[in-house]
Structure formats: structure tokens, C-alpha cells
Amino acid sequence: MLLVATSGWTILGALGAVVGGIGAAIGGGAAWRAASASRATSRDAMEALGLAIAPTLTGEGGVAPIRDGRDTGTWETRIFNVSGQFAASSLQFEARFQDGERVAHELERLAPGDVWNVPLRVIGMPPGGPLPREAGQQAVLRYSDERGILRYEQEFGFLGRQNPDGSFAPSVSMAAVSQAIRI
Image (cartoon, rainbow, N blue to C red; front, top):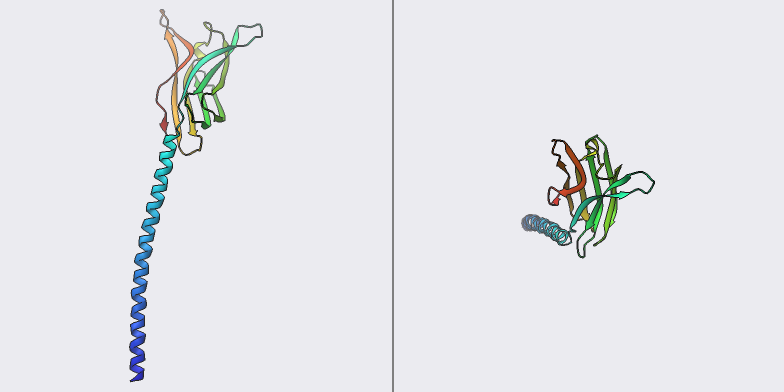
């Protein structure tokens, strides 16, 4: 009889261990779901912070005269951080031209209210330059918020005018062709 009682308690203990294991598995699943929800909440909070501190940048083109006795200047793009309080970081500016030339520049940080002068190329001073073969095709500005949470891209086009004879006269001006989009 003692042998049967010991076997009964062993079986009862084993059943208790099985029930406890099932409970632990269910608890583990609930903990996993809670951790996943916590990660999603953390991602959502980071995204909201990134959107809240998104800098606002804009750009324009111009020519800075080179004072060397020739009628040349440096065609440059000026990138403005018009944000009242948010810096931009990891800035990359890239421009392509009709003649195949490509320029790319990087800047680590652009504080609110600051201007980044990006040199593009040396050209004849307007109205003589840029020449049609030197005309800009497209420019792209990529940047992040100051904490590097979100990344943005904005495209610019170079302007020009149609002459009465039908020829194209490029200018050094540029305009945004898209708003900054998240990438």
C-alpha cells in the first residue's frame, strides 16, 4: 500500500509540474506579447520625437564673384535652416549638370538659422554664364534631424528661360520641385 501511495503522489506531482509548465509557457507568451508591444510603443515614440524635431530647410542658387580680374564666379547653392530651434545633421547635397559633371558635398550639422554655402562650379558671371552645357539638371538634399532619428530628401530643379530665338538660357537659380519627404 505504501508503494501505491508513493506512486500516486509521484503522479500527482508530475501532473502539477505539467500544469505549472503550461502556465509558464502561457506566461512566457504573454511576456513576449508585452515586450513586442513595448518595442512598438518605443518605435512610435521615437518616430513622434523625430517628427517633432524635424528641421525645415530650403535652398537657393547664386554666384559669388571671383576677384581675379576675370569675369568669373563660383556658382553656389545656399542651404538655409529656417527652423526656429531644430538643427539638421548628416547633410548631403548632390547636383548633376548637362555636361555630365556631378558634385557632392557633406556637412555634419546645420544649426537653426545658419546657412551652408555649397560650391557647385566656376562659371562666367551672368548674363554670360552658365553656358547651356553647364546648366544644372537636378539637385538632391538629404538630411536628418539633429538626433538622427528620421532622414529626409528634397529635390531641386535649376531654372532657366527660353530666349526669343528658341534657345535655352540657363540661370544659377534653383527651386524646390518636391517637399522634403521621409526616406
